[in-house]
Length: 429
Image (tube, rainbow, N blue to C red; front, side, top):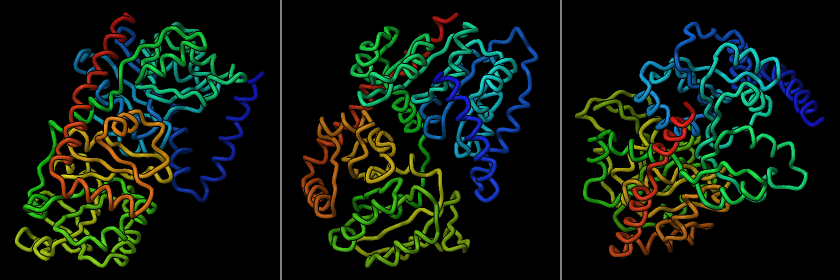
């Protein structure tokens, strides 16, 4: 009965999405993408090994990327199909060169599921972290296609573990194996009778280690930093800046600051600049050239030449730099925890530095909980709390180095989940 109403609800979702698409660009992309996916080409090489990897959006893709690239390395002649639910993932990674096909996931109706699986003909299906689609999972089980969920994390308040959560629990038993991030998740799965859970860790740690090894160099950022300590504020939301701008306005000791907004919005950056009493610039790096407020400047005319005060602030008016940019940082603030959920604390942690973030929306992130417990990270709620915590690590080099070591060691110790996922994949053949 629940399955029937679930499917009816999905049909209603599609109907409403087609209406919303008339005036909402992101929804329009999703609707158009759905139409394209339903004509997805059939696998014409029946003897080719096919891996289907599904990610909800861009964040889950980055989490699963080490596994995708490990599959490509170990099975170079296999066909890899990557699907997304969200336009934000598909639009950015539709040309990803480590897979053979990138598409939207068709809506989870029985008819769509059968058409999609008939076309892809996967030998193995891999879901990343949170994706649970009832009809897909049951059809995969019916066809006896090995299906795995990895980098998963579970909490007691989820519907799987409620007395009335039978519909959701049934989906768990469609997976051949669930590779979880921590022991607590495994115990929760065991408590509802699911015994094929393995503690493997989080593949995001493998990804940040990989990024750190391949980190880009930005001579302009090196010049900006000079000999001063550098605070990088990554994935900043308005809620984060409401707390941090008063801190920046009152800070007097030597410090360089780089702000990487979660979304590139020129108007928002300009509003933040108006609230600042300190000197700030909008900054985009293209190789060794600079672009500020739409003006292309040669290397000799860098806007950074205008920044010489004790505290200077750069707003990044570009995307794609942040993960490599943390290599230059002495301190990191990671945004999102005041409202929509904490962003990736592992990106700065891999380089070793004290990490700060807001609250209360960090509870779903095991690495954040671990770093708080170990003492490498600090959560703050107000400007005063941040000022106090930051001043301590700024003034005390010993404490700063201790926290930096905790963060760096945590990543190195807990990396390696990709190898465990690959071992499970091999067991399917």
